[in-house]
Image 1 (cartoon, helix red, strand yellow):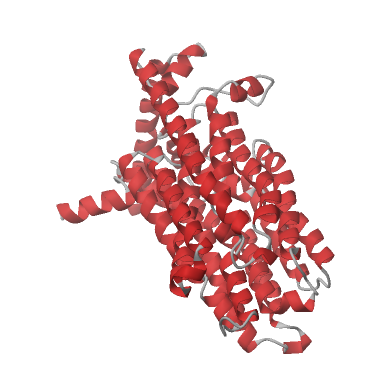
Image 2: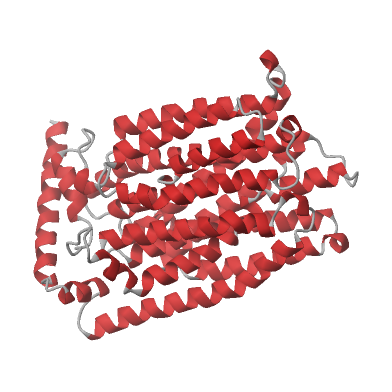
Length: 500
């Protein structure tokens, strides 16, 4: 039993000490994690379907040429980037239980509208507004998770959240392949149009589920599925945080610290290191090789074979999450990703000398790059727990700047008509990898420096900043401990009453 208990601790973390907190954590996982994973699943399902449709007849039906696919993706990215900061600042004002479901239903409806697109211009307009609707999801979900989970609980949940997007990519390829076989031409519609309709039908009910059951953040939780004592315990179990406000001081607080600058730069680079997967290069490469007669792959192959990279990304996300939560050394994942992407890019550049199997290997290991999503945003959450507004801005800025770069990066470095080598793009990955190493080690150094300085003064990093603001951390900590005990006692009493 001790052995399996140790395995459980490594894989899922040490369980809370009290029955009341264990029950609360199960509820948090069930109602918060389930909805944000379903939301992100539908988010990526409605993104991935464009690439699947492109290799399944949409290119020919809409007369798409050259880098038209990149232009459509850029329109989505522009909308996503424009909407990101306003959407995530809205989370400070509008309850997430309203904002998230509203956006989910909106992008689900726009996905169904995509089935009626007759030109590349139509796709650009639809995807632009779809990007605005989706812009609250990724950062907003990380913000909400950081509001509920302790540091040692966070990264594994963030990995499951990120993995839900990869599962959606996997599912979209399988779904398109099945639709192409069974529904192509049904009621006069080609299979790729049915894909958009079905994906939209899947998405809308998820938004309704969120409106009914998603409980928002602990401080704004009014959900009937949590009792008053559980809501109190959810707040008291978290580390003490200084009271901060969205006021004129927020710019000075954010810009005056290294966390916003460095974490934003890290994710600009990290987002571009995902380029092989995010631009669906493997499916485009396969379609190109078939068009020149080098291989005889089918439309189903275009949709099925790239799923290997998606499977690798899911395994990488979950494995690195377990590792970093156990070791507390989140920075190590960036170092691994950098090394892997150098290898993948080099193999794709050398594809004429190494054969098809090695090229498949390169595309598959590139899926490891997605591991950076969960851990970099968990790392940023950990670093900024002492300032709610800074936390929201840092998380939003990381994703916003990354997408702002990606809006032009994919067109310049990874246009579809540069297949099969994408020489410019692969060289860019080889250059970005050492830059990521330098940025990551710099952030780690500054993190350790802050911790060391705080310990020298007799407190945690959060405690030091609290004292700088004139607070009394020891007194606050004692009060939070007493509140937690009282909350656990109330929850335990409720459990006993339920049994009676």
